[in-house]
Image (cartoon, rainbow, N blue to C red; front, side, top):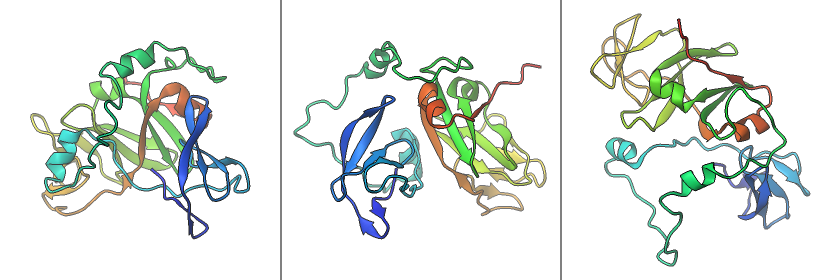
Length: 227
């Protein structure tokens, strides 16, 4: 999700085409073309400019509803009968990948959770996160934690600083080794000495491996510790 303001001026964007199976946007004000995944203008008068990222989550509706019981929901356009078929993802998975990026560390269409911190990128296969959550890790020099929601679909990442966080058995909560405080999926300490403390959130992107790798060529890949 990107802000539509460029150099202090609002711009209007429309779908323009596809590049590496990632769609391109065209702004009506200058005719520049922008890459969806990076928010960067790749052609036109604004080439090289970057849109500002808007903090957002990729959550299941159930998870969002639990956290925002009074939240508002965008109503579907009644003129559109069906946005996508129920088996859309399965059908897409059968299509060939039309990209020049070949990296066999993962299958091209494996779903990954992409995380970037201070220019350093790392991909966390969703399958690994479903087997091991939370994942306590370091990207560059930043200590991070990546965790899965109760729905086994929603994912968030936070800067954990000095805290070593572990899953509390039988609950959706985390516990830090330093103080014994309990933390929830929003990155907030809900009990203990640190109650009310919030961990800084890190943006995550749920993406196919080939797409993440294309736009983050130096990315690392998380692998499960099989010891």
